[in-house]
Length: 228
Image (cartoon, rainbow, N blue to C red; front, side):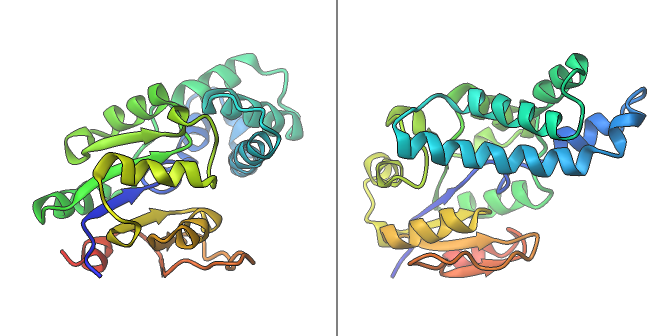
């Protein structure tokens, strides 16, 4: 089967979601936060994802920015930092400027040079995604940035994966879908995409009806996997 289109999840896949907490912890005057930041970053991401699932299954959709703030508020309270308003404001500001992983620009450039369609498919709101793409300087390497806001439900709803075929006119088997979320890659496999799970942390495989087609430690080999 020939791959024509390479689709990427955004947060945790192209963009380092721990960067906001890590960078804030390194700033002068935040020494007290430095001992908490790894736990805050982990809880923030976990709750962000959990809240997106809960909103999807209950039909209580909102944009990803509200989910992101809700997740951070839980994480800060769990670490005894709920009263630090300047810290909260700074962390949210940094989330709009997340760093891309080091291999991302060269990987996307290789795909574009080989003639593949490239795009993001994300739970993120359009404004959030635009901020991250521009901050990382990868806009010219993407054909589109697709947000769940156009269908009003978060992943792993099938309506989200439908956006790829609607935009690029491709069949599911022509798509290589890449995500750092094992559940996302698994659900996309069930949808019919060729999938790669970027398992940077070495986590166990999720127990789901489907499994990712490939498991990688980073994005370096994506062009080879696509057939570039």
